[in-house]
Image (tube, rainbow, N blue to C red):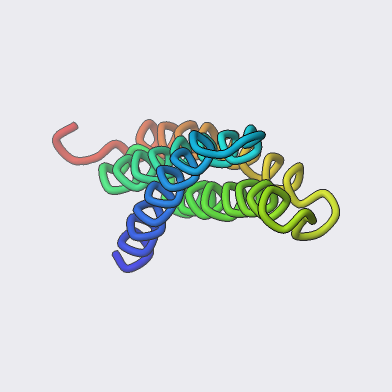
Length: 131
Protein backbone atom coordinates (compact mmCIF):
# COMPACT_ATOMS: atom_id res chain seq x y z
CA UNK A 1 0.00 0.00 0.00
CA UNK A 2 1.32 3.44 -0.92
CA UNK A 3 0.52 4.99 2.47
CA UNK A 4 2.52 2.27 4.20
CA UNK A 5 5.54 2.86 1.95
CA UNK A 6 5.28 6.61 2.55
CA UNK A 7 5.18 6.08 6.32
CA UNK A 8 8.19 3.74 6.15
CA UNK A 9 10.09 6.38 4.16
CA UNK A 10 9.16 9.10 6.65
CA UNK A 11 10.24 6.83 9.51
CA UNK A 12 13.61 6.44 7.81
CA UNK A 13 14.00 10.20 7.51
CA UNK A 14 12.97 10.65 11.14
CA UNK A 15 15.52 8.04 12.21
CA UNK A 16 18.28 9.74 10.24
CA UNK A 17 17.35 13.15 11.68
CA UNK A 18 17.25 11.63 15.16
CA UNK A 19 20.79 10.28 14.82
CA UNK A 20 22.01 13.61 13.42
CA UNK A 21 20.45 15.51 16.34
CA UNK A 22 21.98 13.05 18.80
CA UNK A 23 25.39 13.72 17.29
CA UNK A 24 24.79 17.47 17.40
CA UNK A 25 23.72 17.29 21.04
CA UNK A 26 26.85 15.31 21.92
CA UNK A 27 29.10 17.99 20.44
CA UNK A 28 27.24 21.09 21.56
CA UNK A 29 27.29 23.00 24.81
CA UNK A 30 23.80 23.24 26.27
CA UNK A 31 22.08 20.90 23.84
CA UNK A 32 19.48 19.19 26.03
CA UNK A 33 16.77 20.33 23.59
CA UNK A 34 18.51 18.48 20.79
CA UNK A 35 18.77 15.32 22.88
CA UNK A 36 15.02 15.46 23.59
CA UNK A 37 14.25 16.08 19.92
CA UNK A 38 16.50 13.21 18.93
CA UNK A 39 14.85 10.82 21.36
CA UNK A 40 11.34 11.67 20.14
CA UNK A 41 12.32 11.21 16.50
CA UNK A 42 14.13 7.92 17.05
CA UNK A 43 11.47 6.46 19.31
CA UNK A 44 8.56 7.42 17.11
CA UNK A 45 10.31 6.35 13.90
CA UNK A 46 10.40 2.89 15.42
CA UNK A 47 6.77 3.21 16.52
CA UNK A 48 5.77 4.05 12.94
CA UNK A 49 7.56 0.99 11.61
CA UNK A 50 5.87 -1.19 14.23
CA UNK A 51 2.45 0.29 13.51
CA UNK A 52 2.84 -0.31 9.77
CA UNK A 53 3.92 -3.91 10.45
CA UNK A 54 0.91 -4.47 12.72
CA UNK A 55 -1.38 -2.96 10.10
CA UNK A 56 0.05 -5.28 7.44
CA UNK A 57 -0.65 -8.27 9.69
CA UNK A 58 -4.21 -7.12 10.29
CA UNK A 59 -3.67 -6.73 14.02
CA UNK A 60 -4.80 -3.10 14.02
CA UNK A 61 -7.91 -1.53 12.53
CA UNK A 62 -6.71 -0.11 9.23
CA UNK A 63 -8.08 3.42 9.37
CA UNK A 64 -7.42 4.03 13.04
CA UNK A 65 -3.92 2.52 12.83
CA UNK A 66 -3.11 4.69 9.84
CA UNK A 67 -4.27 7.80 11.72
CA UNK A 68 -2.05 6.78 14.64
CA UNK A 69 1.02 6.35 12.42
CA UNK A 70 0.40 9.70 10.73
CA UNK A 71 -0.01 11.27 14.16
CA UNK A 72 3.38 9.89 15.17
CA UNK A 73 4.91 11.58 12.12
CA UNK A 74 3.19 14.92 12.64
CA UNK A 75 3.56 15.01 16.40
CA UNK A 76 7.24 14.09 16.40
CA UNK A 77 7.94 16.59 13.60
CA UNK A 78 6.24 19.39 15.54
CA UNK A 79 7.94 18.50 18.81
CA UNK A 80 11.42 17.93 17.41
CA UNK A 81 11.16 20.76 14.90
CA UNK A 82 10.20 23.25 17.58
CA UNK A 83 13.01 22.20 19.94
CA UNK A 84 15.56 22.19 17.13
CA UNK A 85 14.51 25.62 15.88
CA UNK A 86 14.70 26.99 19.43
CA UNK A 87 18.23 25.60 19.78
CA UNK A 88 19.57 26.92 16.48
CA UNK A 89 17.44 30.01 15.73
CA UNK A 90 16.43 31.12 19.21
CA UNK A 91 12.68 31.08 18.53
CA UNK A 92 9.91 28.51 18.22
CA UNK A 93 7.86 27.38 15.23
CA UNK A 94 4.75 28.91 16.79
CA UNK A 95 3.44 29.25 20.35
CA UNK A 96 2.90 25.86 21.98
CA UNK A 97 4.28 23.90 19.00
CA UNK A 98 6.20 21.40 21.16
CA UNK A 99 3.31 20.76 23.58
CA UNK A 100 0.96 20.40 20.59
CA UNK A 101 3.31 17.82 19.07
CA UNK A 102 3.52 16.00 22.39
CA UNK A 103 -0.26 15.94 22.69
CA UNK A 104 -0.57 14.56 19.16
CA UNK A 105 1.91 11.80 20.01
CA UNK A 106 -0.02 10.90 23.18
CA UNK A 107 -3.27 10.78 21.22
CA UNK A 108 -1.57 8.63 18.58
CA UNK A 109 -0.55 6.09 21.23
CA UNK A 110 -4.16 6.02 22.43
CA UNK A 111 -5.25 5.53 18.81
CA UNK A 112 -2.97 2.49 18.56
CA UNK A 113 -4.74 1.08 21.60
CA UNK A 114 -8.14 1.78 20.08
CA UNK A 115 -7.05 0.28 16.74
CA UNK A 116 -6.06 -2.94 18.51
CA UNK A 117 -9.33 -3.15 20.46
CA UNK A 118 -11.48 -2.45 17.40
CA UNK A 119 -9.55 -4.97 15.30
CA UNK A 120 -9.97 -7.62 18.03
CA UNK A 121 -13.71 -6.99 18.26
CA UNK A 122 -14.02 -7.26 14.49
CA UNK A 123 -12.17 -10.60 14.53
CA UNK A 124 -14.48 -11.82 17.30
CA UNK A 125 -17.62 -10.77 15.42
CA UNK A 126 -16.31 -11.78 11.99
CA UNK A 127 -13.70 -14.53 12.53
CA UNK A 128 -11.30 -15.08 9.67
CA UNK A 129 -11.63 -18.34 7.72
CA UNK A 130 -9.52 -21.09 9.23
CA UNK A 131 -8.83 -19.07 12.36
